[in-house]
Amino acid sequence: MVKKREHITVTITGYTSEGQGVARHPEGMAVFVTDAIAGEVAEVEIDHVGKTAAHGHIVKLLEVSPHRVNRACPIGKRCGGCNFWHMDYEEELRLKGQRVRDAISRIGGVDPGEVTVLPGTMEGYRNKAQFPVGASDFGQPVAGFYMARSHEILPVQRCRIQDPRADAVKTAVMEWMELENISAYDEGSQRGLVRHIYVRTASTGTLVCIVANGGVPEVADTLLQLVQAAVPDLVGLVWNINRRPGNSVLGDRFETLWGQGYLEETLCGLKFRLSPRSFFQVNRQQAQRLYDTALELAQLDADTTALDLYCGTGTITLCMARKAGKVYGVEIIDAAIADAWENAKRNGIDNVEFFCGDAGQAAERFAREGVAPQVIMVDPPRKGLSPAVVDAMAQMAPERIVYVSCDPATLARDIGLLREKGYVLHTTKAVDMFPRCAHIETIVLLEREVL
Image 1 (cartoon, helix red, strand yellow):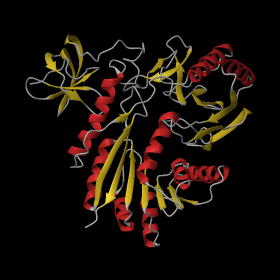
Image 2: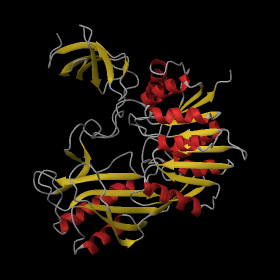
Image 3: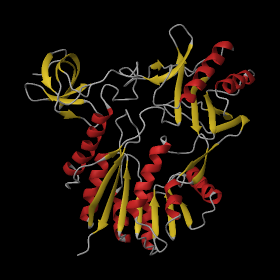
Image 4: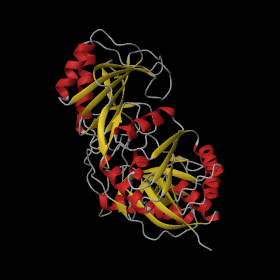
């Protein structure tokens, strides 16, 4: 019988999808161990016993992996953001590639072969920061990140994966709140003013958005002065009002206090306008590699008609349009479609059409109207494709399907469903969009089987 607080000696044999070490209790139950590395032998204390697995932490390392390193981030064990500061990057890339390979072979029923992960820069790559704001036990305002599996704010001086400008803004806002006695929002009472500090950074400058539980205070001029001193490349200061309880960061009302309410950024040679609400990949350098890889697999030319489902603000749609004859983009969020049309206009691209609607309904519509794309690109949310989307895609019978995924498990499931529709997995690649974090982006090419 596995018991809480029990001490056992285990060998770490692999990893969970979130990067925890996997071991076996002497009685056979799987034990997930925080901050463990494959191959290590450790004394582990059991923290929680579930129906199918137990969770524990390392009390003492008995055999240490050569991939274990000293944490470069001093708060890495407490913060709920990163997962892998305790191991070197070589092991992180290996486990991410293995995760993709295992999911596709076990769930999808197809052997993808070895999966190489394109590495990225480990520090300073995130171009968007969302710092929750609260009050310390002494009543002082604090900002940082939520601790793992909680809503307790861990104050952070420097986040190593964020652009340093974001930390500079956070420090300036904290100084303003203390100087002008500005209250922090309290989730329990739903009182207090400042809820989040939202920062977007680009090669063209920094955009700052203060998310608040009310209107702009009279001392906003002081805020602007402090933020400008912290980030001289500031292009805009925006005030957002969000009075709704819950986890949503942004509200619906925006007021630009100074400058412009957007940033401009270049990706794959195209210019995009980014407001606080706009979707944009948080790792620009790796996003370029991701899109280049997807376009390479799509094999587009001037005679190609392509369909981009889940197109967002049209980033990859417009990249496809530079190579294809005609591209259709579909997205369910109307604000994103408005941004997509604006981005097309800004870049002088006129061989695209965007439609606002559910991907499944849009795919059915295209199939019904006889639109016959040679290539379909999909980049769905974590839940993957719905059966309606899979059916409609198969009805359109494209030659190639390029699937960009943020979840290897749902990708593998959909590979299995598409295989039943006559599509064979041809190529599997992965891009590390989030170094030091458990997420991994995968790109696969599926080709229609010729009988």
